[in-house]
Image (tube, rainbow, N blue to C red; front, side, top):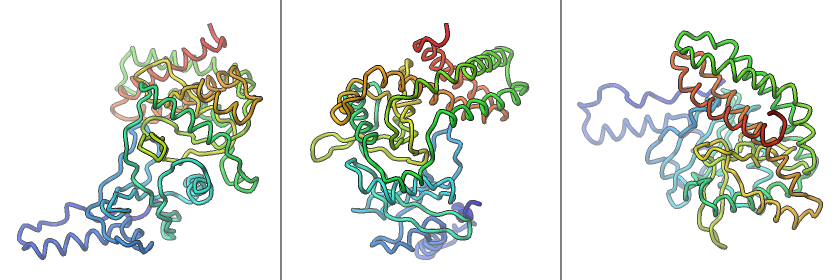
Amino acid sequence: MKPADPPDSRGVATSWLDGAALAEERRARLLAHPAVRAWRELGHERLEPVRVLPGRKHPASMQSWPLYRLEGVGEDGRPVIAKWCSAEGGRAERVMYEEILPEMPLEAPRCYGLVEDPGSGGFWLFLEYVEGEKYSRLVPLHRALAARWLALLHTTALSAAVRARLPDERPARHLAHLREARDRILRHRANLALGADEVGFLELLVGRLDELEAIWGRVEEACEGLPAAIVHGDFKGANLRVRSGRDGPALVAFDWGESSFGVPAVDLAQSSLPASGLCAIPDLEIYESVMRSRNRRVERRTIQRVAQCGTIFRAVAAIRWAACRLETEWPAVAVQEMRFYDADLANVLRAAGWVR
């Protein structure tokens, strides 16, 4: 159950109020906001935000949890992200921010704290709003930074107790995503808002997913070879920033809601489409160099093979997200997105030699 909605920001007609009364009403509405109430429980120096803005979410996101930006309450007056999470859905992110990230040799968003929300069965997570240069997969320096960052992440040791509190990342999870995506397409391909060309494409896409499921055993075998690791799980440009650090440019990753422990394939995903936003396309040669400095048994062909699996997993996940919108009155945009994801899927399957 989600927390109660914030007060209607539009309110009632207040044109008759003088300046002082208007300011008082605005403050009352601000303090009644559920994210602000939770923030004040933490007892930080700045208790009242200048304003509260809705956080930005990717249109393909399946997550509908409340997300806000509290302006002016963070360190030096910086914004703070207030994110409500369900107890189960936010479990991995909570473990990352409370137990893992503080001990890692990587730059990470500051966590200002968590506040339990008993009424909704979830909690509020308060994080630094990460500023900096937007990540671009077209900039070689950014891809190099991503590769080094991932190599450090993937070689960080965890205790068995902490590992057990993260979801298990295995190919079987992505096979379930494939089946869910296909089922959604089959259920909604008769949407009257779809044209004949769009329906024809969806039929071809179902065939591609059938073909992929038939060779899934080969995908599972291809995932072997790299040690199990912490996995970010949603490693793409939208969740990355590049900012100046003590030793030069540094990558910062946020949105750890999909983090897990296991096969690191999804983090290494590549794309043959320059316009694709599916993944960060880390430089695999640099990743190999850093990995081999820590584990001489890692081989280039293994990294490339696992990265191909990651591309498959990311494409399948994106098709699944888009398929959720096929039942709406405007499914054409979802179909157009699926064409891009299908192209990535077809390209990687051919490159791996698994289909003609």
